[in-house]
Amino acid sequence: MQAEFRIGAGWDSHAFAPGRRLWLGGLAIEHSQGLAGHSDGDVLLHAVCDALLGAIGEGDIGTHFPASDARWRGAASSVFVRHAAQLVHQAGWEIANLDSTLILEEPRIGPLREALRESVAGLLGIEGGRVSIKAKTPEGLGTGGAAIATATVLLQRGQGG
Ligand code: MG
Image (cartoon, rainbow, N blue to C red; front, side, top):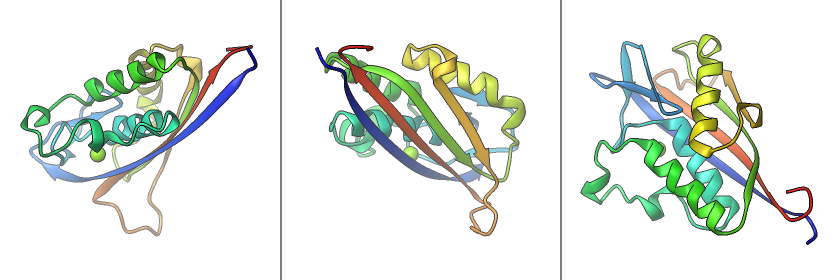
């Protein structure tokens, strides 16, 4: 079977809000505020989820987990990512790699990078070396009150897969 590939891109943003726990990449992060949202607000996992679903043409996170559904109120976004990864595998694909960028003022991602990478890799069932987490501060964007995440995933199957 000849090697086949699919690529998927995800993007998400959430506003910071006091009184919320900060979740990033499936980890609870020590910080003064968290991200608002119907679920746990994990902006990175939402971008990852959309990248996975996009790569197999299965809509987006809202298609599978609508905010109108009370079941997903306060839900752990790891549930969304595991479900998306399961759909990917059911469709016969393996995840080759994931590259992502976080754009936020705080907290600093550098010290968290390896933990985030291992957490996301664990949720996807792949080794950490296939996951990249990059970070930027939002210079000139005026989005200091929000966290933005992008994610790009490559799927493969067949020879070399
Ligand atoms: Mg979201």
